[in-house]
Length: 342
Ligand code: SAM
Image 1 (tube, rainbow, N blue to C red):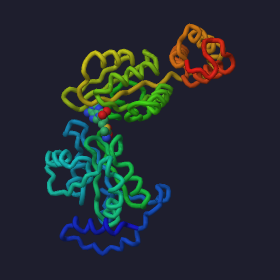
Image 2: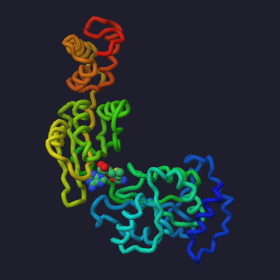
Image 3: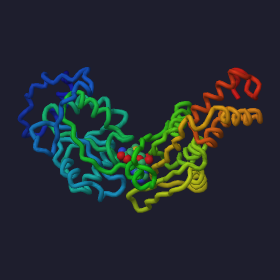
Image 4: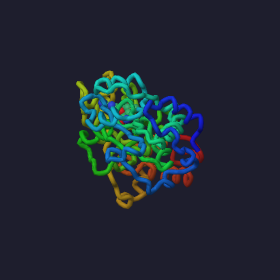
């Protein structure tokens, strides 16, 4: 059931000419429903369904205000309320588009879950509720997806006004394969989770799109070079759609060296070529174990030896790591003590 406190708060938003305050909200029971419960409930705004409420996700520019679409302006200027990350930031965009008088409510990563009830109540009462983020598509490394899931689970209408997204813009301009790609967003900043995600990214055969803060670009590129090998192709897209737009293409090692040699300014997207697809059967275990043993006997740590052998043979690091573990268990002599941590 919709929280009565939320409904009460909503009363304060209503336009003077609202005539549906007595809608039977009690009939809208979304508690405990999941997205799949709502399968079959479809709807659309912009298609003449004005009498029904809708949650509308609206893409906004990633730098160039000229990228705000006419449809986005239309929906934002007629929405009953716009949820946005930073009301001051979004007010500037609206002012640029000549939109005034639309109510703004904050929706950011720290209050998204708390906002769900009021968004659902509002849509259920026939309101058009727009959601924008500071830039690009809401829900893409930005708040929005949890509200969307809840509104979908409630069986209510969701629509989207597509707009720019930094990841897609960088991907299509990268020159790397676009037929199959995956979006990784921001990597965890440190620790085991970061290491494990880096390994997964390095082994991914599809082109991977990553977001990164400028101050962390050099460190992330160095980590990628270590995991993927120096020669993997990469593109670093900076300040897309803005005055200083730049798309650098080359190898991971080249990108890492460039990023570490000068301060990186502005926003960046990393587009990493996929790992070469090598049939597992193409390389037998023998040469891999041999290459591992040579390195371990020379005193290299297991992690380094695995990285090097995986890069040299162009095969998944996971497979080499498993062989290293098996060798360690079978034979304690080649430089690795049983259960040891080399
Ligand atoms: N929702 C946004 C989208 O659809 O692209 C992404 C928001 S995320 C919080 C911000 C990140 O997107 C930045 O750290 C950067 O990696 C990337 N980004 C945003 N605008 C960009 C631009 N103009 N050029 C390059 N990267 C950009």
